Picture (spheres, rainbow, N blue to C red):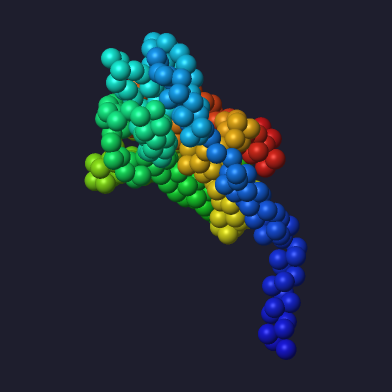
Amino acid sequence: MRIKALAKRILTQLLHDKRTLALMFGAPMVIMTLVYFVLGDYVQQPAVAIINAPVKFVDSLEAGGLMPLRMDESTAHDKLLSGEITATISWSQGLPQLEVDGSDPGKVSLVLQIVNAALANVQQNQSLAVEYLYGYEGQSSFDRFGPLLIGVIIFFLVFVVAGISFLQERTGGTLEKLLSTPIRRWEIVTGYTLGFGVLTVVQAVIIAWFSIYILNIMMVGSFFLVMLIALLTAMVALTLGILLSTAAHNEFQVIQFIPIVIVPQVFFTGLFDLTPVLDALGHLFPLYYVTQALTTVMIKGGSLADIGLNILILSGFSVLFMLLNTLILKKHRKI
């Protein structure tokens, strides 16, 4: 009888917790829908630039699954630098030469396989000269996905710590005491952001430093730029965690936001080939710009100018979340 009463009480509490019910039944469907589209039948054809190659060879490349695009040498090099194509294939003195963007070992492996098969079809027995614009031959998956993992781990940990910490400030009555003073809402938000930000930024720096110098993840660009990206990642996750914690009543509800805030963003970090529509959708999420910037610096050796737009957008996300935090505090007290 007591067991029945206890079970009934728990069930009643759950049925009255609309957020928990929504996450239990809604979040799995959202995530599975994303997985369905991300891991569906869509296969992105690697685009390759063709410079003075035989027609039969080009036809073999297309039949093998590549997207050959004829263009001049200058245009091909520019598109390879920008990441619009995976490789350039040119013929010099009757010999094939291949230049590849090694930042994605999976695509490079596919291109090499198809190119070698196409050479065999046109009875070209000479060896293929391969030059890597980014990355290197035999690059490990850890080097490929390292920048993505750094961004995701920093974002995830800072979000959880910030959300729970700010929640404790609310439930402990500290925030109410502050709101009863003449201090302005934006000062409260800025103060909390700076206070929590010190440790979260240090945490982000340690994660990036350990990954690069202890685990030896591939690092071509400036470590200073990686630290800048890590700092902005921490600030975006911090301000987002504080923002969403205002809708939570306990630590468990903060954790509940992970399936609907963190998990969907992981699909848009470059781990998967996405359809154009899904790829465009990824531009709405901060983690997309974090991983793009880290990959550009760590694997491609990009400069501040190359990641300037990512930096501005991440800064914009952080400012936006701070403004929303300030507006939400208005429901507690009008100044």
